[in-house]
Image (cartoon, rainbow, N blue to C red; front, side):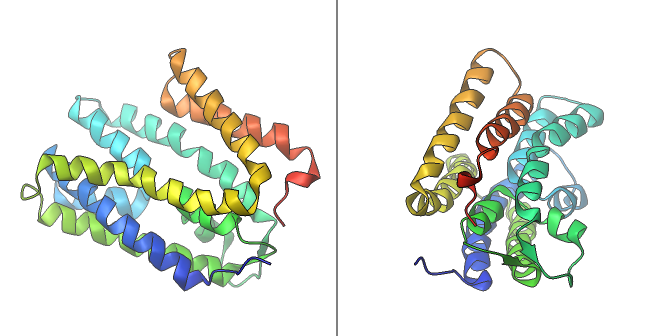
Length: 224
């Protein structure tokens, strides 16, 4: 029987990881000329690391607001799939579902979905609030100290976002080794589509639900 991690423990793990990554985002926002309110607003209202870094890259290339908004929307559509995957496992009615849906990120989903059985709505909210605090707080700190960090350190912090996701998903794969198959299938499909020139957001939008549907028709893939 696997030990169930408490929501505070999970949330603090994500908080510390998010904080230092968000510092890089805050510093990047300052570097591309965004005002402090706009940089903080990205983290307050979007709360999606990969999309926010992509938005900074597009802004640095001179992309307009409409292009940045659409690209961010497409890349974030994968969160709809993650929210639907957790919906039927959430127990309780004290927290409105739209609030819980807003707090779902890749890392929150990976850490929560790996837990067996039902998920308390207040437990999920605690995890999300801690993750949110780390991300928004790190963004503000990063903007304030922007220009003081060496460029190599900022780049390393950005890469840490993906390293943290790997650190969260590996324990789940060890507990449920059969999930390695759909994980690899989704990764290979995404890699193949991008190799054909499909934009990142669209390739993720196609690969995640396609593999989820393919494996989800068989109830043995449910972690509950």
